[in-house]
Length: 151
Image 1: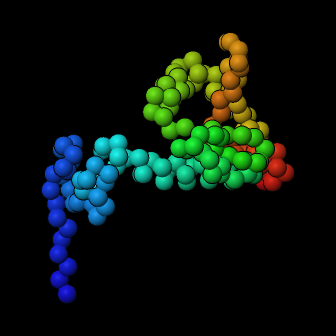
Image 2: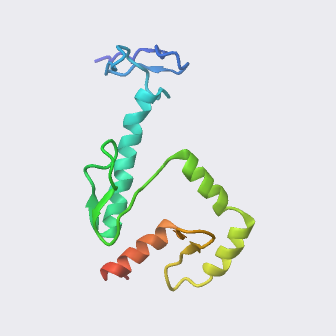
């Protein structure tokens, strides 16, 4: 049995993406192509990935994902040893990653990470409130110690 190939065309929203049309008709009355970069098409893809990250973090802290996180606001985790707010906001992440990669911070981290027998954290005390920055692996390790499940 011959299955016809999906119809490929330019996206009708005007984004310039060429690809196969989606089955679902969006609220604007158009059938966008797959991998369309417009906000209506990106939102569901980001939502599913964020939900997965929130589940993983909630499991690490010994809690569960907050059903009210996301569109309804609220923290991302409920229960557990701490409350977590996860972000993939590009502006926030790029700024912190740019700062994390600077020479000064790298020198500080070299001394901090030379001892691998305990979880490590960098505490910023330049102004109030003080901030704690650490890698996710150290955060997960700290959560396991707190719950009594450390290896």
